[in-house]
Image 1 (tube, rainbow, N blue to C red):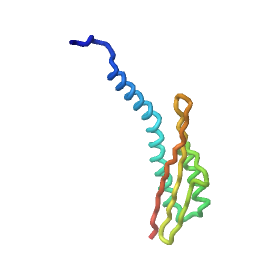
Image 2: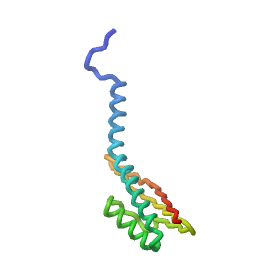
Image 3: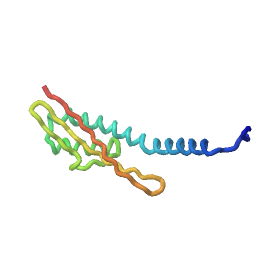
Image 4: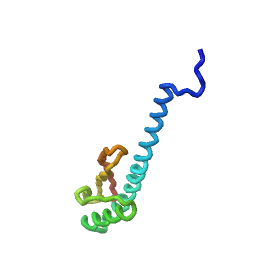
Length: 119
């Protein structure tokens, strides 16, 4: 028994729905992941410069660089700077909000930690 050509069955409709959902979620999340990686570079640079600056200066420069370069709003309370005798560790929490088509929103929390050792 042959099936008529051009008809859509349940299986092909299901796979088209899965494919469309995957494309939509990729459209939403790939820029966020890309920005997180770029923000990691900003945090790494601030870590290497932290040896010559106070914690307040590091926080201020990190917030300004994230806003200017990547349009990311960081809060002072989301930046933790720990100084050891030979190294500096910076821990940043970035909280982007994802808005979906049907009005739902989800807030994520990405953690970025960088450390630099000074000899």
